Amino acid sequence: MQKLVIAGFAALCLVGTASLTLADDAMKSEMGQMKEQMKADKESMKADMKAKKEEMKAKMKARKEEMKAKKQEMKDKAKARKDEMKGKAEEHKEAAQAAGQEMKAAGQEMKAAGQEMKGAVGAAGQ
Image (tube, rainbow, N blue to C red; front, side):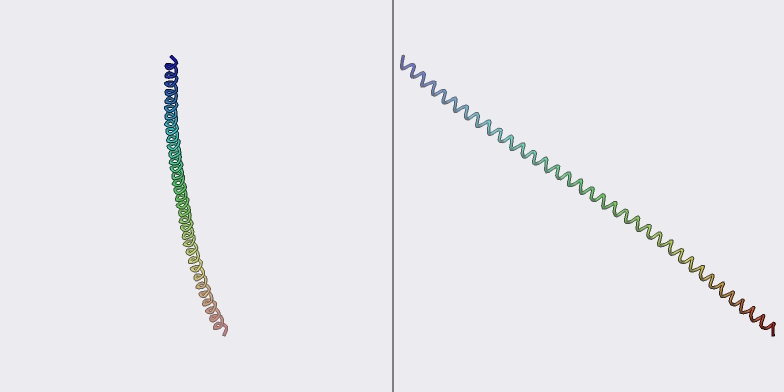
């Protein structure tokens, strides 16, 4: 009987050791799965951050291009106004020159008329 108890005890020890080994293997397997899951999550987060960064970069570039186009449009409008004002100023200058020439011509006519009157008055007085 004592041999049976010893044999039973030995069998229990072997089964207990085997169950500990199995538990250790299961634990290692689960730890490996957790590590893989964490690694996958980390890579997923990295990819998301990279995508968001690219999206923000694209938005900033689009905004910059929009501002550049707006600035160019304003420059074009200012140039058009400047050219328009330059044309108007040129017209006024030409009109003023024409008026000045008319006045000069009228003055010369009056001078000639005055010379004629002087000559007519001088001839009549002699």
